[in-house]
Length: 394
Image (cartoon, rainbow, N blue to C red; front, side, top):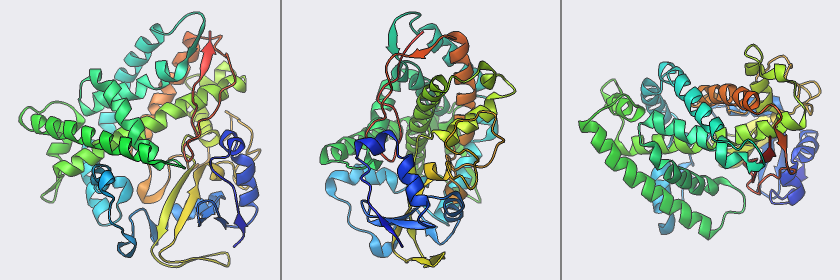
């Protein structure tokens, strides 16, 4: 197995990780990423295969479990019941129950809400001068839709954002004790709020996801309060965070590439959004634990080790995508890895797609001369590839 070194905190890498991905992909099915201390896969075939391989998973093997530091107890109390961190049979049971509440019908019913919130946000954008599109548009739409989905007051959006940002920071490279303390405090505050809100909904149910989660049952099994809290936190953190930066990255790309307006027409927008997710996804890597030895092209992933699956590199694999480093909205659709795959395929992918397909055409129809005011810079937050700001003018 070849070994490569590339700091995820290096400024040049943060702004453009794709040259390193190309170099790593050329070295074989997996290379040892020295800065992380584990192998990583970069080509589409290997990434897709490992996403679906039941010999790998997200749950920490029992023999590798370590005591939770006291200062992180609130954070890991939430993580313990998260779909993202579970494997069979616990994952199967929990996901089946959640899907009884988070149905395609409920997601489709959010379309009028998405259109209404989008229209309101656009009406409030400046008509002249420079402004940051991330907090004024990209952030507000998904957090308000998540609030409506859960059934919590939209006035809580600032708290939801604060909690989400603090908790998601735990997954980025170079986290500090300050980041850990903020994440634990956010987890405690969010859990306390949700615990009280769930109890309120038990006595006064409504047409919202929390009420549906309370009612969901299968073979006599129901979700515990702790499982509902973890599910709501996951929907906020994974769904909201990814959609915010999918929108930000998409707007940057569409402007820089001088994309024709036809790419956002009703008959084209779905394909354009898939190409945006392939070309400039917000999440670049997820790791897995290896539960049994896995042979890959003469390389062994050893039981008990970890392996990185570089989703963004898979999306630029020239073996799958011709002219992989070009943004081509008319590209014939092929599967990409932006939403993961296998057991942990993103639960909120249909909602994220619908938000993008509504928000992007509406934005450019409302501000047809939208342009970048300053060159956008990506934040030093790998595994996330997101913009610090998106300063634009109309």
